[in-house]
Structures are given as C-alpha cells and as structure tokens.
Image 1: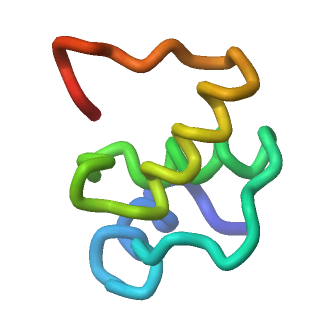
Image 2 (image 1 turned 180 degrees about the vertical axis):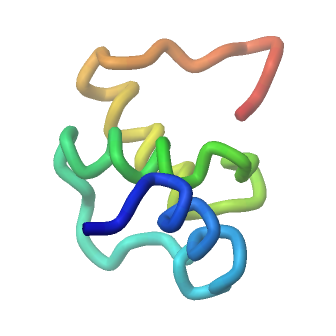
Length: 69
C-alpha cells in the first residue's frame, strides 16, 4: 500500500500526473487528488484545478478570492 508521501513525490515528479482528467472526478477522488497535489498551485496544475472545481461544486470547499491555490 502506498503512503501519501509516496503519492506526493510521484505527483511532483511525473508531469502526466498533472494533466487534467479525461472524465470528471467524483468527490472522493477529488479529495485524494487535492491531498496528493498539496504542493501544486491549481493555476499551474490542471489536475488539482479540476479536483478543486468538483469540490467547490459539491460545496466541500469555498474557493479563496484572495489566496488562489
């Protein structure tokens, strides 16, 4: 079983892990993606941006207007 730190390392080192998804994430998957891409800025990481969008639409997060992710 992989730990979160392993996934974070992979997320930071493999460019394809930053691509936008071909199909929308579910809420549970979006939570995992945001955790794995914690060091990424959504403005530069389409995958994290897509996950945050799903969470915002589900009411799970409120996007900051002063501190973009």
